Length: 316
Image (tube, rainbow, N blue to C red; front, side, top):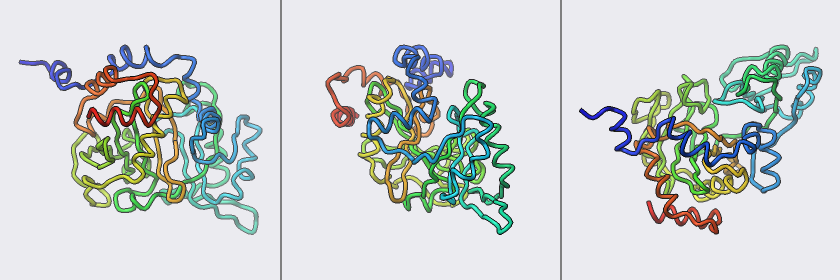
């Protein structure tokens, strides 16, 4: 009987150890990690390379600065609070509405309908600064960011929150993509670990294919009851090109690029990940290995983003 590991290997499934040993360590220089792990540094980088990203309203990097939070967001009734060095969606707080009373008290309405007081918001920021959500457990910085408006394409197939598109990029060539859709279980967050949906995407044209939730295949969104397969993500060519440009911008040879679609601004870079997960293979029902090997075969160092996309799509 063939072992399950041999079966996975035969079907081209990339495992954790191989991902680290053959793709992350050789292709992702350690000195470039801060450029993607620290979202504030990522924002600075995107400005240099003219890559659109959600606007930043301010940054809080000291406990004494926590009291400035309300002033930094006072002109923005909706905003996002996030740790600069967070991961997997932890520590992100999405405020959809701000309510100010005559006595000066402020209440913040979260995207899931819950209410947060000014004191609770400041306490959350304090937790971020303490490193409660940081990848390395060290003290962190809090970013106050623009709250995006969901693109009409997602209205029928997403539960609150903002969906995002994860693209795996190898040596500048997009090799696999999935759409992550928020659910009631995930609290409106596009995070697979918290119960969001992963939907495979046909790399050549942006068409949705297979869907998974908690590693189980499904055929419709559990909350909206809408079927997912066959729908085509808007601005797909622009999404692929932005993903490919992140290779030139970050210097990382193997990375995950997360992109959101805003109603008015179109595709925006949310963040880059130097250690992208492997759940994208389940969503696409395909292994990554064959596509990574294909890139090694066809790569041309002289290619720009558009050339890389054209070359990989011609081979798939």
